[in-house]
Length: 141
Image 1 (cartoon, rainbow, N blue to C red):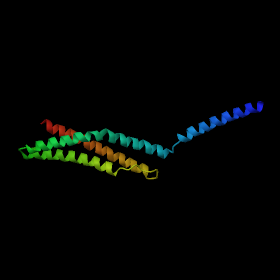
Image 2 (cartoon, rainbow, N blue to C red):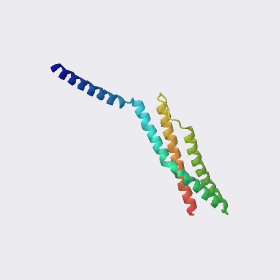
Image 3 (cartoon, rainbow, N blue to C red):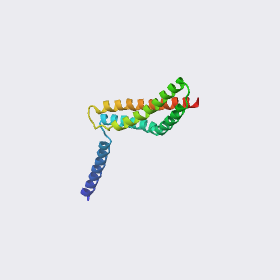
Image 4 (cartoon, helix red, strand yellow):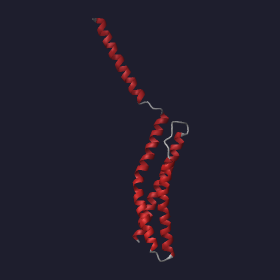
C-alpha cells in the first residue's frame, strides 16, 4: 500500500512538472520573434487606423475636382490641383504599401524589414491625414 502511495505522489509531481515545462516552453519565444511580433502589431495598428480614411480621401478628391472645374483664376486652380494631387498620392501610397507588404519569415533581415515598413506606413499615415486637412481647408473657402 505504501508503494502505491509513493507512485501516485511521484506521478502527480511528474504531471505538474510536465505542465510547468509545457507552459513555459510555449510562452518562451525567442527575443527576435517577440520584437517581430511587436513591430508587426504596430504596423497593422497604423494601417488599421488610416485605411478607413481612404473613403474620405476619395470623396474629398471628387469634391476638390468639382470645385476645380469652377475656378476662375490661376491661383485657385493651382491650389486645388495641388490638393487633388496630394489626395491622389495618399490613396496611391496606401495601395502601393498594401500590395508590397509581406509578413517576413524569421531571419536576420526580418526586423530591419519590419522597421522599414513601420516608417513607410507612418509616412502613408502622414500623407493621408495632411491631404485630408488640406482638402478640408480649400473646400471651406
